Amino acid sequence: MSFPRMLRVKQHFDATRVENVAAETSAQLTKLSLEKRLKPGQTVAITAGSRGIRNVAVVVRAIVDHVRALGGVPFIVPAMGSHGGGTAEGQAGILAGYGITPETMGCDVRSSMETVIVDRTPQGIPVHFDKHASQADHVIVCNRVKPHTGFVGEIESGLHKMMLIGLGKHEGAKIYHRAIADHSFMEIILAVGESVIRKCKVLAGVAIVENAYDETALVEAVAPEDFFLREQELLKKAVAWLPRLPFTSCDLLIIDEIGKNISGTGMDTNVIGRKYNDHAATDRDTVRCRRIFVRGLTHETHGNATGIGMSEFTNQRTIDAVDRKITAINCITGLHPTAAMLPMAFETDQEVITAALQTIGLVEPPAARVIQIANTLHLAEVRVSEAYQQDVAVREDLEVIEPARDMAFDASGNLIPVHAH
Image (cartoon, rainbow, N blue to C red; front, side):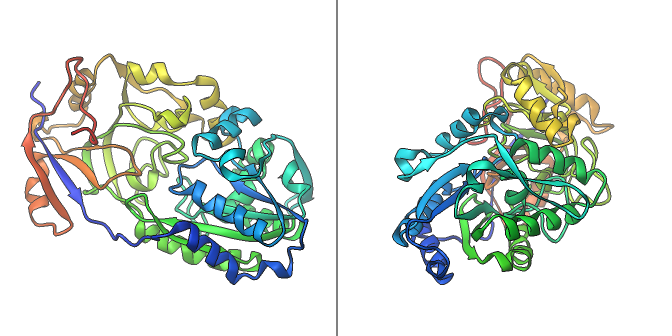
């Protein structure tokens, strides 16, 4: 079979970014005058999650330093629902992978899957809260604000989600996801969030928004009473700065790697579509990918292949890298069992692409619209097939940095990754 020839293309996105992340974090916290509530000697639990947030260790360390400068005693709690295999050791290991350890942060990292039930929502749902955080005098909630991969609302993924899923640990994540099957996402997130703010001594929030280049575009300290309104506004910024595929439809999307450090669903459904249906774009999706081929898992995902079930094709080495138990725990907790299903696999990428291009309809393989990306977080440089060449030529936000060439395979018949030059 003849494959499409591919061009290397650079996308030009809004490049708003924070130059000194630590200084900005400290300045933002200073604006809240936390010394009015934080007394010397009081303990402060600071959340750290499992997403691959750029500069997360820098932000968390700046929060630690600010708390200590006010005379407080900071400590860090992993806040990541069921990730890390649903174990305290696994969650501490994820943070260590991001450079968040007692040694680098200068304070304790207290990892536990134990929770306490601090309240019940009007729907009768128990509100779970991390045991260590519950014992602190104050809690600072830190998270990235971005569009959720499965829900749409005025609030999606951010400070509220960290209070629910992150600090709720595995038990909380299970019950809240189950509740969302019977109640609206907003109904649950507002009920639990209000309860946590009222009952769990939340001192402040630190919201992070990233630009399309996976850089820190904004850091903002938010008072608890402002979480709801401010998170809505920050979500709008996050949507505007979201990285995107260069074109809204393709016959085959090739993704070099997926993982929990990239997205909650391994590959961000806000980028690839399939937010409402794992295997087809709906009228509510803005992107339509007829077929998806996942080439690998990130090292940081530790075998958690959540989201691989949204693709039709993969290779055997990716199947071999999947930790079925960890993936199952995450997908069952998130009420997304289809995300753990394993797609059709072939030994080499060459075989996968041959098979995939036989399933795209009447278009002949050399004329297929193919896009290859590193992952859904890093989209500044991509490869697109010659079928898009005329479209690229009229787009001011796209720049050809390498002319059309045959698909590049290594000696084993596997594609050269986008970020390999």
